[in-house]
Image (cartoon, rainbow, N blue to C red; front, top):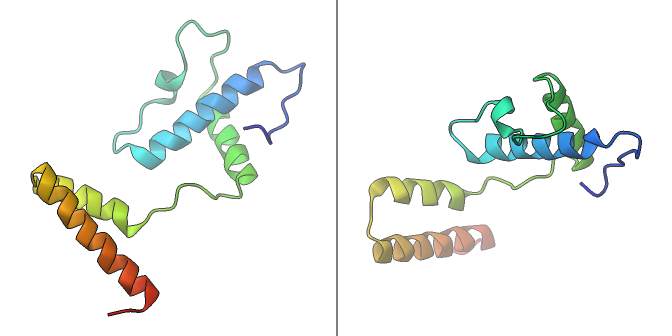
Length: 110
């Protein structure tokens, strides 16, 4: 957010950028994305229209050159392992083995 230039005569812009960042994060992490109105803090000075927040999301993403937390096979593995319901020791052991396998594939080792 520090690279976004906020004008002193527009104090609402920091809050709008914050809501937009929360919205982007929710879209990346959550399966049920909250309503934009729910992302806005209660008792706030400013309440933004639904169409304004996606515009700021695009500005934030453009500023980041769309470089966000990349999806990796490990994220999928963690999700799948949790669905399997393995106990915590098996979970971590399986995850370590998968990590080693993925790293060896990337390194070109069989």
